[in-house]
Amino acid sequence: MTGEFDIGGVFIPALGVWMLAAFLLSLAVRRVLARLGAYRAVWHRPLFDLALYVLLLGAVVSLTQSLTS
Image (cartoon, rainbow, N blue to C red; front, side, top):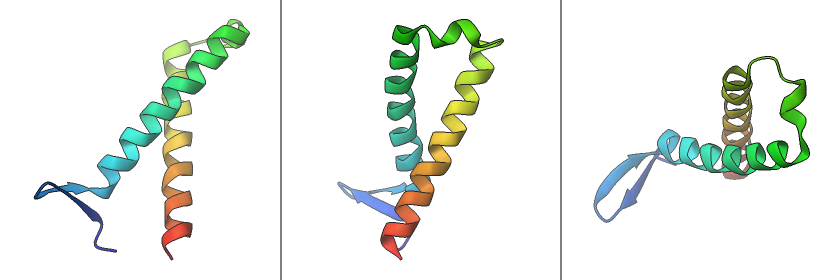
C-alpha cells in the first residue's frame, strides 16, 4: 500500500480519507447520543465530541491497517 488514493488523477493521503470516514461516523454517533439524552451526563460537550472523534479515528486506522496487512 502506498498510503495514497488516486481519485481522478489526484492523490489523496490515506489519512485524509480515514479522517473523513471517522468524521462521518462521529456525526452518526453524536446524533444517536443526542437522541438518547446521553449528553446530559457530559460536562463539556465539544471536548467530549473531540475525544469521540479521536477514538473513532484511531479505530478506523487500526481496522484498515489490520485489513491491509
